Length: 325
Ligand code: NAD
Ligand code: LMR
Image (cartoon, rainbow, N blue to C red; front, side):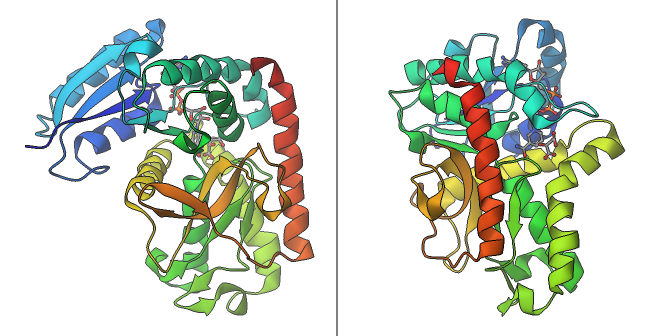
């Protein structure tokens, strides 16, 4: 019997967690023979709802779920955890921009960064999903000086998956036929889903779809997908976000395929001219848990302009929360 691995999930009574927790308990992150202990963090007013979620988790009789820790104290939630999904934050409502969330959510990630710094396993992998995810990840990094920036990433996998799916549908192929998709920048409507390096069954994507479709359909559709889902459901995406969170953490743990890469929001080292110290989505490969930015891709003027727009938005967000670090 393997030793259980400890996984924290914040915002455990929320809608993303309602999909995420049951997937974790089913072994979809670490496999069918790896026991886990779930550490569930919520704010006090949400505890009655969380109680119901815990009852449902228990009612699954999962052979992998050895124990559940329920708390409203981040120092308890993050104690010795190996993986942390920072989901808990207020989501956008209809008509709100992600920027509007900055003020209400930023403080959460300062507190949680400090708590992770104090008590989490030194090798912890922290995936920030709560919006605005890139800048929240930056706040957490800055408040956890005892951990490395490499312990943190923010979620751009949902954008990456959306981009793959939209291209696959256009080309009449399966999602698995698409390789080397890239989403650059912020998890917001300034993100740049880029087809210049993407392959469809080994062929250049841009040789298969009209340039006009790339510019006028593909880019805005992927950029606006979160808003479209929010408008349709009256609530922001949840099941697909939980799915992407598992995908991103799995890739981070188990690595990328040799012939492919993924998009991940990580602390910029200045690659592709992006200001170092912003959390920016890059194409990355992962080996043995270590994330490396794919270097040397040709970036034309069209792409460069879009990278700059997203960088400028992230600088603005960073400047608005400087008081937290
Ligand atoms: P939700 O409102 O259903 O759930 C959020 C939960 O977080 C609530 O139960 C709330 O009580 C809890 N919470 C608030 N403050 C907390 C704190 N300090 N500590 C612990 N828990 C706290 O929202 P949701 O739909 O689950 O979305 C969660 C976040 O994820 C939102 O910010 C949303 O915008 C974001 N999101 C990100 C992506 C992405 O791709 N990065 C995709 C979808 C949603
Ligand atoms: C998404 O991309 O679906 C989420 O970030 C929700 C949102 O606010 O758009």
